[in-house]
Image 1 (cartoon, rainbow, N blue to C red):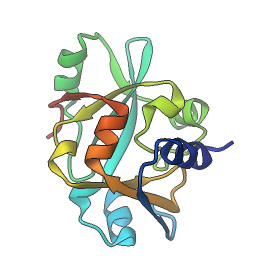
Image 2: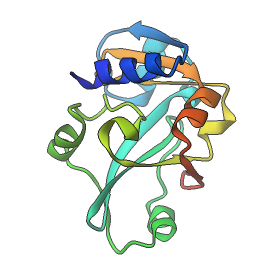
Image 3: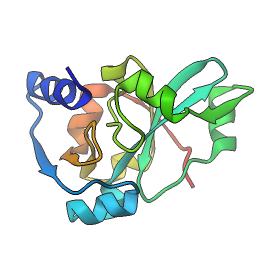
Image 4: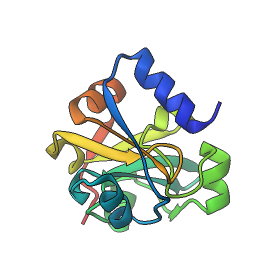
Length: 153
């Protein structure tokens, strides 16, 4: 079962209401927001990073960027880097840009930026660069119970 199917199954098993949209392939947050017809602020981008020897998922508003220095301090790690495209695919079964913000589906630790709870809805690529889901942020937060931190700029 691919990431999209796993995600849909997880949401349906937990009775989470969501909107599904298929669109042209997108590579950037700006392209995704335009394709979805949504404000970029509600876009939730999932970033896979390697912190020392462990992979983690950070999720933040598509309108923001990661403050690497803050993330290193927050995690108390020596080294921090983005996962390579091959590592992303091996960990998630997705190509970069298609990873949904559901670390639990991939067995990764999840940290969400403080910008995510500020929006009523969140929209994200759902396993592929051509599929998006939109759901209520409160449903996402209550279901995943992520650690919420301040790591964006």
